[in-house]
Image 1 (tube, rainbow over the protein chains, first blue to last red):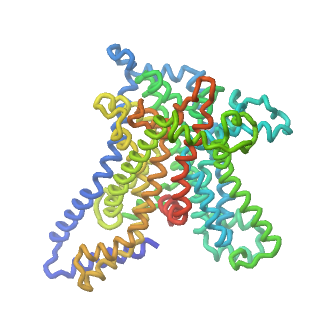
Image 2: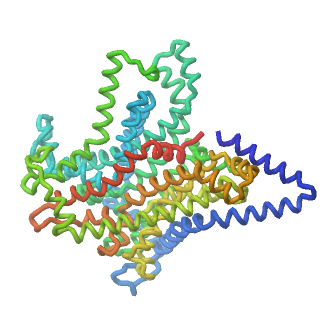
Image 3: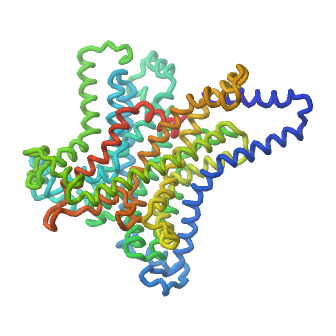
Length: 330
Length: 283
């Protein structure tokens, strides 16, 4: 859809350029040069700001992570090379526990969101025009709502003092009015993940909806004519054709889930063993002002994100740029 | 199937059930905190969904009462910082996306690629160095101290969404208008701007949601009500006395900051959906 007008435009521009009487190669390269200058002039500010707000701090974090440095004792700053990393890696109780919880949350939420999101996408895809708008409006509410608000909403539903869930579901074995959901790991992490899933499934659903819309109708019709069951249509025609959309959705959400912070901070603040990597980094550097150690946690978190990306692109061949055709710009 | 608009009774029932399930899924948690926000202090422990008697006292507390200083300043900070960050991001991203869609220059791929890289960047990884730097150069606990990092959240998605929008604009219209005697500026304003505005507007809404949602920068780079936005302020709410949980006040504040989200969604759901899906996955 985008490529056709673009190429025709480019051809037009090139042909009009060469049709000028004395427009030799020199003139053309001058024009290319001035176009390049103009391009960077108007695209540059956004590029520069994006990089300076992220690239500079991460370099600084790598540098800081090599020092023993607390803001409470700024004069005691000393170069310790990788000592901070060794300290972190040898701390099974804190770091490995947080990493484990973070990975657990990432895997479970993304898996659940994928299934729920696909269901939602199917419903929206097949729905009649007159209810489609209502459905989309409804699922955009969790998408747009502030994560902290979602965290409080879920917290208050289950909270032992103000919640109604214990009362409503008292008949379920294991639930009674004395159940404190946030006192132990299993229940606490379940509510944290529920809030995360509720808030972010709409995003996955919309990405998958776009993927569904790209599956050619003829293929589905042909499968139907050939007598394929609903299940066969799904697994043989629809899902294979949506593979790219699914992969992109999974990778984006996995990276997002790996950075989970708000829900944990509000609901448990890391108690009941629910501490995650982002919270660990926050509490070390901003909370305890141990800049050196905190920076090391930040750098590890960053490397984990890079690793997830690398694995996805290398082994699952996710082409993130395929969406907006970053490569289409040639 | 469903597209012809005529449903059998069973299909109708099926669709009604599905619709109700989706609506319940999407709105139940919001309804729960909305109900909580109308509970009296005594009612908060009543272990039921609805208040036994409805009250505005929680809203009074945060809008005109004791918690007013805490909430209203945070609300002002949130609105101001978010709108400024959104505006700057959309202006810069519009220029950037225009260049990407319209001009041939080396480095386009680098710009789009780094926008992608920045969008998957863990915020928490950069917050410590920024915390340090901001304290040294006096940006800590100020509006610009949040606006600048918010740009790292809002710029990447704005650039991608707008680049996708701009690629679909038939730029030839501009030339056509010029042939018809319009100046270049007139041609741009009359032919292109009306086509580009919906994309820019949609991008602004999405950027607003993202900045409005921020929590990590908000709690890390502020320390007082001088710049602390609402999500961060909610985490610092305390009850009227040390024996009272701030549940009612937080619920009311949560509802107040959800109102703009709901209004935008109600008015512009179609544009938001197309913006989100275009920016992320497009064939």
